[in-house]
Image (cartoon, rainbow, N blue to C red):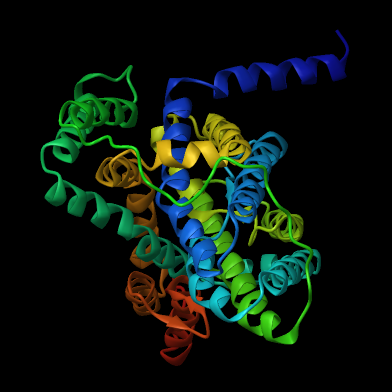
Length: 404
């Protein structure tokens, strides 16, 4: 066997090891999270823009199918759990933005947004910025942005104490006593069984038909550029890529920042051409798939991203028929399982943010509380402003690494 064949054999062997019970269960959790509530936000934005069922299906196809391809491509290329999806806050701001614009203008703005992100990636600006940002401030932003998963899990137990409570209890019992079974898988299975027994799994009624996608020709206007392109590009960079990069760093990876940004830009332009608001590296799904729940060996956790990517592709292909079934699952079940999967990531982020030996403590605290808030300025959400606020405060206070 020559060197090339041996290398291919090692890759194939690693891929087989990466697809295991833990990675599969975590990938499924990430997909359920991304295909449930976020899909409903996209549908609501489509309704606000008075889109046809065909245009709505095209939107869902663009962001989910391309997002899935991004996951598969990045996982295979870099062997890291780098997930693709779309900006959930970006979909939320479109609920208001589409009310005053033609959808053709919005499609043009989606393409321009992807072009902005692509240019930032090609020039290497984002990679330089991430190297310059103090790590405690980045980790504090991650902790603040993702703490909503933990809070959401607690609130889900309050809303559905029997179902969500049973899922949480099983998660910790399995983590303590049954090492061979992924806790997140056990929690999901038990929670679903309880939900079925209680009659909580009900088909959702959504205003979308099982039709072929209808694509919309773009038109480019200055109003749409400032109303959609600029804030959407800022969200992709500041809320999605930054989160994903920080999460990967917290788990000990060395993420390819430029490649992630360029991929987000290309995905944004292609998704825009198909009628979707972007397909980019996604913070929340990357956080779930890079967590310890995806496997004890970080080098094999990319298997969860592959699973998530395949499920995203399937959801995009069959969006018209799949949406009601996904939305039939109780929201509390998805929220509590996703929150439990985030525990390891949150612990790592907090530990690195508030390690005195790393410095920048006040700046990190400011970044934490801003990221936890619902602050939104100029159409840009809290994670971006958390980084800005943390750096500004640390600069004003002349904070830095402690002298040794």
